[in-house]
Length: 335
Ligand code: TRP
Image (cartoon, rainbow, N blue to C red; front, side):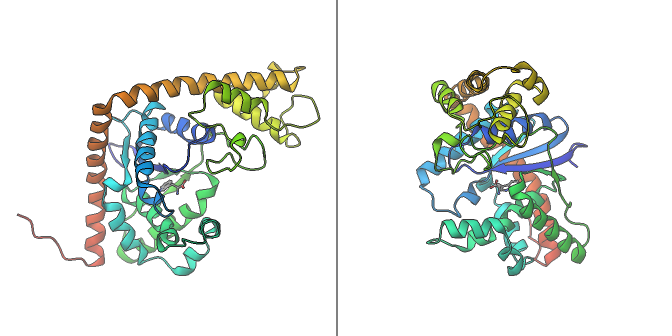
């Protein structure tokens, strides 16, 4: 608990261009959580280098992501928005947790297997121990809840196991975190292959709407979205493309699928797709404008980065000192 609130931790990688799915499925919901929880939202740049990055691009994207957090409505006075690499406790705790993690556990991680297959020329040890760094992120702040997508559940389960394993030896050191499954948080699928998640690494750019796409591109992608030959606006499993468009529409307009289906009863797909396009534009245009404004406020963003890194470091340090003492590292002589 911090300030009588439960602690929430989540993070995003600054690799690739963020999509509408990242926004509607994650970021938009994060904003609603900051009253209830003491929130830490990290730009996890240390995770990014498990895959080779161009340094200038990574730096630029990390800054853009941090700016986007604020533009999306996360108040940096209330939410700790910071770069993972600015708080050395992440690496320090990750090392200790590495020594409590079994090779077999990491070998079972499906994301490792996928990424190793994709980057066969660079299967580095960081890629292998990535889930341990993620566990360190979460445990460092004694997080109670972690909003994550299904694809990260296995990593969260490992985090819980590590916390319990450590606690079993050394006493109650870590809070054992729970997954936060959002009440709304639509899962947005690809516009071209509605059985696949909308992804920033999709090779087909028409499958994803990127947060920085201009209005015409957004409209065009919605218009070209894959639907079906039923020809009727219904919300059902048999029409996955349409269902995805309805989810997008509803998430943008804060409506329920029933309301959307009623609203467009008797309309053709073309007309509905146009409405979806407009709904997305009406959400993304103001967001893009806010990003552009914030990008000009260099001093302000810099101060957010500095202050929140200090805040994160303070809480991280508290946990780290406890852990270091428990495992037997010598106390530091002060003064
Ligand atoms: N691994 C997560 C992803 O790729 C990002 C992440 C890193 C994260 N550390 C985290 C998410 C801690 C939640 C909590 O999406």
